Amino acid sequence: MTNRYPFPIPFGWFCVGYPEDFPVGRPRPLYYWATHPVGWRDEAGEVHVQDAFCPHLGAHLGHGGTVEGCEIRCPFHGWQFDADGNNTLIPYSERLNRKATLRTYPTVERNGLVFAWYHPHAEEPRWEVPVVAELDDPDWTAVGRTEYTIDACWQEMAENAVDAAHFRYVHNTATVPELEEYTTGFPEAVMRSSQKFPTPRGVVEGRIDSHAWGPGISVVNFSGIVDTINLAVTTPVEADRCVVRFNFSVRTMGDDDTTRRVGEAFAAEVDKQVREDMPIWEHKAHLVRPALADTDGPFMKFRKWAAQFYAEPVADERLVYPPPFWPDRVDDAPAKATAAARWTGEAGTGG
Image 1 (cartoon, rainbow, N blue to C red):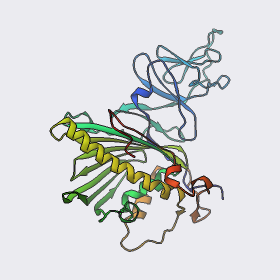
Image 2 (image 1 turned 135 degrees about the vertical axis):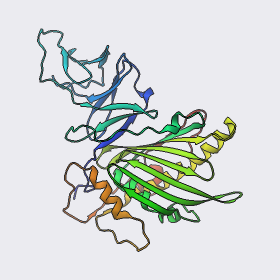
Image 3 (image 1 turned 120 degrees about the vertical axis):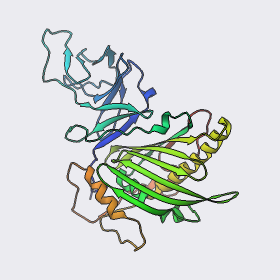
Image 4 (image 1 turned 90 degrees about the vertical axis):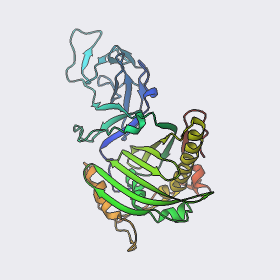
């Protein structure tokens, strides 16, 4: 009973950082998908993600490696590799090693983030990273980012999208969202719901609508209090741990100060709810056959959609997958969970 979940690491497009994380000429060591990639930006401005270990003798290209033009150079013996992972130079030999290649992950910069395509069998991308038009619209303002490292798999967290009832009991809301539509396909899933938001001036009718592209990308639209977009990206670190990044933008409300103040307050409330969710996600067991109420959301429809993104077998040796026991998290699970917030501008942590 060592597996935390029955699920392997899924395939899809995943965020590996922000453009500023990859300055020209400085390789960055990464750790995602239970493997060691390296990210680097060449002198032409393109970002690349490749396996980090030099096929010569295993040096890590992200620790001491350099960028030479549009190639990455190993710190150990000076071997160089191009953006396709091919060996282009062995400085002490006149011959190249054609078998010495780096696995290269398709990479794109879009919507203010850097995405890499991961598939356990190195298959080519099966869909594109969507363009979120509002992020380049002058009528919208970016108000903040939050980032969390969570000891749970992506599917366990994403299941919240169809779980309206938990808002009442985890987040203490007076009402729960009313699910109006849940449509799934490949790779997309669309959820539309109405929501009553309590405010000092009374209840405001609003909406929460989300659009997911595989396990790694979701755009959540909030309306009612202030029109807000959350570009939510989830990246598996290992099968049972993920990095989650939220990127908030709001429709301009007439002046910059009001827009930022209201937008940051709304984003802070979302941040608060994530921190309330974290101890649930990290300490709950995964039940293969949950005992659902007749008014619960479409959990099994969600799980059928999620199953499309596993290229490797899903375990079937048992029906209950409990979490590890973390003694240091017993007294104050939310505080012990690893979480950090990074806000743009002069915003606070939103905690």
